[in-house]
Length: 253
Image (cartoon, rainbow, N blue to C red):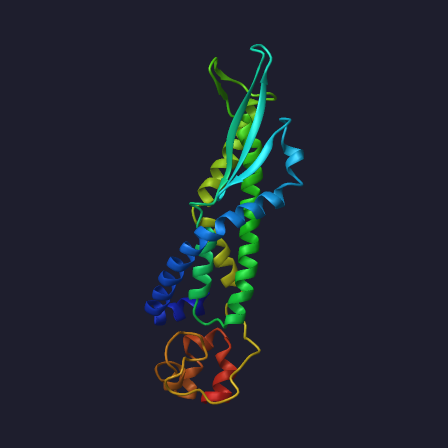
């Protein structure tokens, strides 16, 4: 991580610009992708829902980017059956995927292959956290009071201890879902991936005005090429052993 911090200090302006542009474009793209993502979450959770759903004749449906549950609750004393609509997951305001992807695309010192691998792992792990939140909501929304014309009623199978537990679980996922899951995954991916050399190196010399192979975003003449061999050993990009170590030997040094 020390090498990443040094590289970020040297290139924070282009990195910040890349992140802002990537996040803006990905946030707009997310508005179109969110309904398909909601369908994916509902599909992944479908095998586990029968283990959590205690209300019979419950229908799950997708409304845009929102997954909702329609539960038919019988009221024996009133001789009626009411239909309760509960929202389980709303992707319209969830920009964790866009945030994580923008951070990975803006990271200096990575090749596109490394970014692609990190993006696949990051989105996969992020989807697991959102699936867990979705399943928590399946149980949590069954514990909410039922609002009827006769007043609020306790749902079948209500338990105060269970409500307290799922209150805490819901609060945890709701808080972490405000971008903190994406940031933690990004830091984890940096820890395991940053500084690992990439097998791909340029087969021809790198020009002065070409992007530096270290991935800093600067031109080669303003980055590693402007340094002597002794200085290159101490540069931010080489200090972490990134792909430009071999690239400089073959193309620039």
